Image (cartoon, rainbow, N blue to C red; front, side):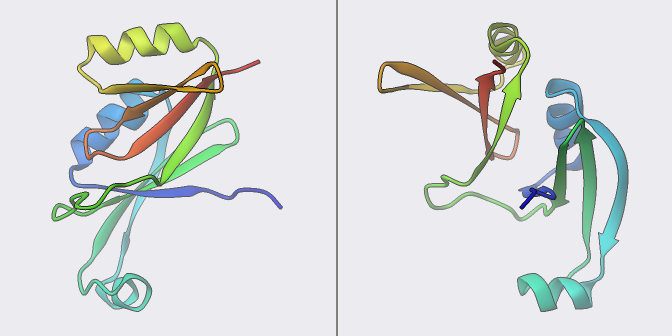
Amino acid sequence: MLLNHVGVINKNEEEAILFYQGFLGLDKIRDFIVSSELSYQLFGISQEIKVLVFVKETVKIEVFIYPEFSIAAPNIAHAGFFIDNLADLIDKARGKGIEVISGDHSGRTVYFVRDFSGNLVEIKQKQ
């Protein structure tokens, strides 16, 4: 089995581009609209939803733009990426005001960042 893509919700298109393209370095390859009919059938939301598609190497992320989005309950859903230079990315995040979250897991530090809509992204050093 292969992962096709990860879908996340963002409340703002410009912030989604800033995070996924500007910060993570993925390429925005296209966008499309999910019709209100299909959106209702799949997600129970009766409105059109714009989707931005970002890729890099074997990673593909579909970002659904939904301005009413908020994370009301604790959110543990996330995507995880191997990064060429973890220390540089953490420094870059802090320099751009992107929240860096870390914790100890069996003597190893685990890192997450949050995009501008609050979605978690796990980052690990590529081996």
